[in-house]
Amino acid sequence: MPPGQYVTEKWPVLHYGAIPRFNPRTWDFQIYGLVETPVALSYEQFMALSKTTLTCDIHCVTAWSKLDMEFEGVPVKPLLEMAKPKPEAKFVMVHAEQGYEANLPIEYLLADDALLAHRANGQDLTPEHGWPLRLVVPRLYFWKSAKWVRGFELLERDRRGFWERNGYHNHADPWKEERYSSPWE
Image: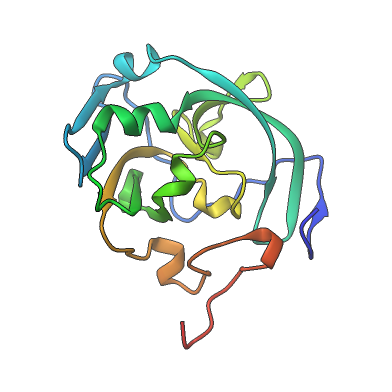
């Protein structure tokens, strides 16, 4: 367990703003920015992609941890490889519904444990937990695992996401307790 965390059996629901409505006819997923081949997939195309399962622990900045979560979805690495990132692409801005953004170094999304999940613990995600698509990056605090994901923008330089602009640590390593930003960061 990372320092400062406690184990919960529940999966608490935390988010900012309303839960967006999902329409499979208009939903799409895009990868753009510093890529050779921009990607745009309909919901049907996205759901036809090869899937895998991942069992991991998740850690929230509010100090709860849920152990042995099982997520099912599309691994991020092959998706990014489909877009052929340019060598200067070092960061990714994850875009989600309602203008929400989360920033990550690209290496976290190229790791084998990065997943775009549509199921958790054997059931479809609920709208409160990000249906139809939630990013899962288990090595970072769970706010980096954005809900309601719609695309990735590959960038040369880091740009802070929603929570990072509002006082949360830019990196978010739970093992280092990188919860909040200092005024000088």
